[in-house]
Length: 556
Image 1 (cartoon, rainbow, N blue to C red):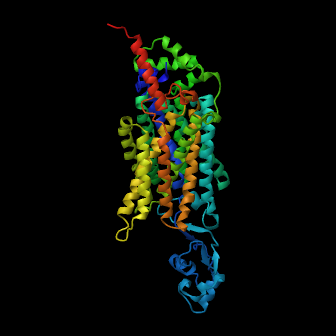
Image 2 (cartoon, rainbow, N blue to C red; image 1 turned 180 degrees about the vertical axis):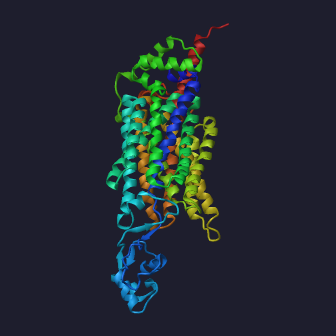
Image 3 (cartoon, helix red, strand yellow; image 1 turned 30 degrees about the vertical axis):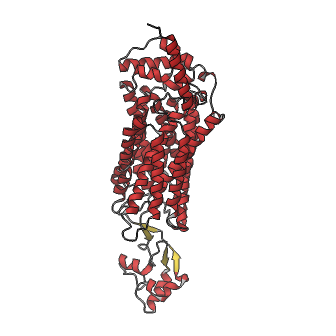
């Protein structure tokens, strides 16, 4: 018996699954907080050289007001430099008493020096960020870029390590290890006295939240029957968007970065309660020969769902998973045959391009007018309709065609947004097309995530998903690099994003349609086994099955 048949008998989305699924969805919210927190804790408020501590005692300027000091000592258009006190006094004694930026002395480079007493940061939007507390501006600005790179490096490591280990040791233990690491890293980061302490903890945050989210996403798709894979796949993404939006509210109320870091970290403690309620994946238990544990979980699920399971089913499930339990599986099993390699590299490439275009469009969109907190909230809210549309469509029309169309439409919209002239009103057709691109790439991003979970066999699913998440992180890094193409041409980044989206959409034609089919258990299923991924093989098997049924059917 295939596992999906058991799920139909057990209840594809019964009370047992609903409770556990809601539990893993709550981690999706916390994961989003940690994935996006740098937007607020690393924000760069407006700043200028500190003039309040200038020592003007005993000089003709000792009675200057704070506003006059700004005019007198700060060059126009520069935040990192000030006029030397002696040069200003010299100019003042010579009879000039205005802003030196309009004075001939302003052109004298000897009169301009770096900020002598530090910086003053605006408190209009943020009370304190790591940028303002550690003065990560001007010559120290590289720290912010470095922190983002280190965070993505952590995500890469977490995706690979947790993917491998969760396939080896199980989804459940790796989830709790991820939560523990996230709790420790977030807590230490919130007390970090400098960037040398903060950066290693930020690396661990990236690894922990990505690894644990990967585990929960895989667990959610293995928890339900085939008819509900689309629903759970997009609902868990929707909870991620809820985390996106709620972070804006938390950051608005808690404007000190240390307290905000604590606020998004301490709720992780609550996931310790899951130890008594969150079971191991039944699929993983069966595929690794842990039949006794699997039978206990199935029995408990049947009891909660109010159904009875025939004892002979356990024997059938053991026989079905016998091959899978004979050995351990590794990354090489994702690519050691032509069909598995073609499937794996196609998924990984699509994940990379989807991430690149998604983050590229997000970073390239002009800032909305108004509060940065409101802007951030809107950026999360626009994802909800895309997910809702996918939930409505994917079980009806499948996964592959919506993926292809969304990437084609999104890619073409990006290209057209830069190719169509906008001499009259730049805020009309071009912006609408860019938003169409953002909407479509959000949908395709979620679809390819779901397809990856459905197409990789159970025994290498977390490994395949881990490499896919690694590809996603690489795509995010590449997005920032591709945006630098604006130096060559302002329209070039969106044209490149759109073109790559079309290329990836074209390769998606080679992906199999997983809708309505059993999840593959082992790589042998992909190579022509029970998963029936190749449509020609499926038709042959259906024909053979019909012939057998006709032969066995008694004549009347």
